[in-house]
Image 1 (cartoon, helix red, strand yellow):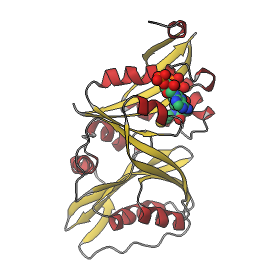
Image 2 (cartoon, protein in one colour; image 1 turned 90 degrees about the vertical axis):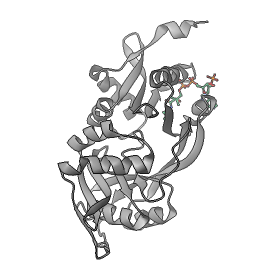
Image 3 (spheres, protein in one colour; image 1 turned 180 degrees about the vertical axis):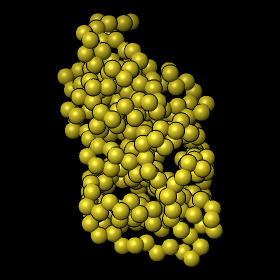
Image 4 (tube, helix red, strand yellow; image 1 turned 45 degrees about the horizontal axis):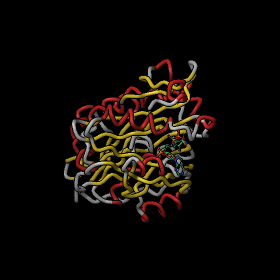
Length: 285
Ligand SMILES: CC(C)(COP(=O)(O)OP(=O)(O)OC[C@H]1O[C@@H](n2cnc3c(N)ncnc32)[C@H](O)[C@@H]1OP(=O)(O)O)[C@@H](O)C(=O)NCCC(=O)NCCS
């Protein structure tokens, strides 16, 4: 039965006009997203708001990838409205919009109980590294490898590498990323085997996605961006990898937080030859 509070708080599609209020909600949580970051995320996907008396009191974004996969993020309920079932309603509504797709998300400690009740199960963690690197050793490349700037003709190849690494066809996300990000490609024998994107985000820059065959390849790609932006505040969100964590710590980008990766539905078996070493962002996955 519909409760009184459910009638006061209405859910509807998020539009660009809601972004200033959505941004105010994330700022209140001390999350670093700029208004431009919200704009980027909404353009890449779909969004819903919970509204009460014309004020946005809750947000959620979803990114459908093909017919089978999706990610969800920016699940926020204004502090004074929490515990009244709004988070649950936002999740139910976005799940209805995403249909039978497997949904992947990165859960904060606050979100974990809600997602667990909705049938999400943990499958790993994401470590948030950030800071400024002042001295970055030049990576040693194998003789047949080189790092070069990404060009528009690489688009299909990097979408394909990303698909192998994360099991999702994220062409729609990359269509937005190509407008907002710079990129480098790791070639081996003149064939693209990895890439790393770099764009403005939050307090500085984000390095990601980073896709590579191994951790050495990932370090090579990340070094490129840290070395060419020495002293600039940068963030890298990495799936738990102790080697990469220790390396980033040493460079001046300590781990400042962890979130739990969760999924509802089947995940593609991981590719053995190419892996994701950094996310597009914690919300986007
Ligand atoms: C996470 C968040 C969105 C939840 O929103 P909410 O409106 O307070 O959640 P609800 O009132 O709908 O609660 C949802 C369910 O989780 C349960 N729940 C909520 N918080 C809980 C807690 N701390 N411990 C145990 N259960 C909890 C509720 O009992 C409810 O269960 P039910 O539907 O079976 O009754 C909200 O706390 C928030 O905005 N937190 C800060 C931002 C954040 O971390 N977001 C998550 C990003 S991944």
